[in-house]
Image (cartoon, rainbow, N blue to C red):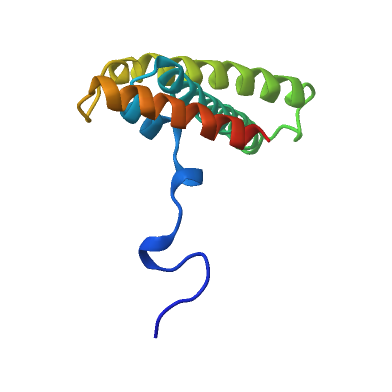
Length: 131
């Protein structure tokens, strides 16, 4: 009952699945840790911005029901966009500041000869990824 094809057991190539955190661990090159932190901050910005807009809409629904006002109130899209931008920027900033401790944190020991070979391999993977 063996699997056939490119996704079987230990023969699957992992170089395409390597993220920037792992590349930073292997090479120690700071551009990878900053790319990893940037990706985390962008993801947090999208999540925080969408939650801010959802919170604005739900708050306006609740206040319209409590005070018996019309819904949607005038200016709701602008208000939601403002909340979305504000909470998106706040979430991105908090994520960026919160991931500062990752810079310089290497789990793998760096050896001189191995580090140079790993940097060459990582730059080759970057070229392959952009093609």
